[in-house]
Picture 1 (cartoon, helix red, strand yellow):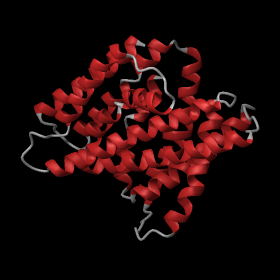
Picture 2 (cartoon, one colour):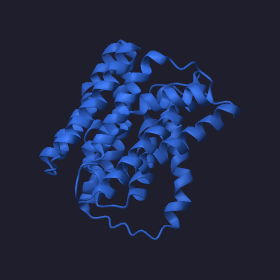
Picture 3 (cartoon, helix red, strand yellow):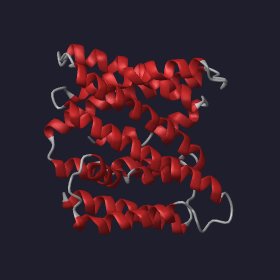
Picture 4 (cartoon, rainbow, N blue to C red):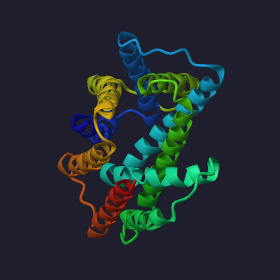
Length: 274
């Protein structure tokens, strides 16, 4: 779990350093990650034939997952990897609200203070006190929030697939995403230049940071208590902060540090209350 979360925190580094358009990065990640997970599913004999209704939920989840990656990867270019990743971690609250609206699940009022604290953290993290680049910061924050919402939708779709294994679900969602994005990439005017650096970044992102990382996470999920999983998941944003500071030299303002601390604190308290 530690290794999987550490890998997650370096995804932004590969996306930015590849130099490729975000659309191409997501499409190639879907292809490579899907094929890598397919090899794992077949080798471990986890394949279960989906039913007709399950194919619909797989397609819906795959579309949400792809749009989630597109939004988050674009957010990196506006708000930086650290701020975007931390804001993206408000997804448990988004899931809570969507479950209440879409599936009419009861909304636990005792958790609403943590939601409000996280929203305050988002506002501060956006750099609203900054003199320069405030509009770009807000655009990145909006994309990160959209990515969190799309991930929550993918989670709701995955809940409908209890009969299938997690690795198979992820594999089929990624392959579905690759099929959906294929025509979009073909008709795109964005130019992708595949130098050695770009090829290496995409291969590592698809095979290591997707196929292998998902396998690590699913193995960890089977062996750890929920409290341990929730606690170790904070390695992800911590690693993203280290990458932004050490590799890109990004220095958030004090108010942004405060905002990110409020978000992580609110998410920690929320998960602890579960």
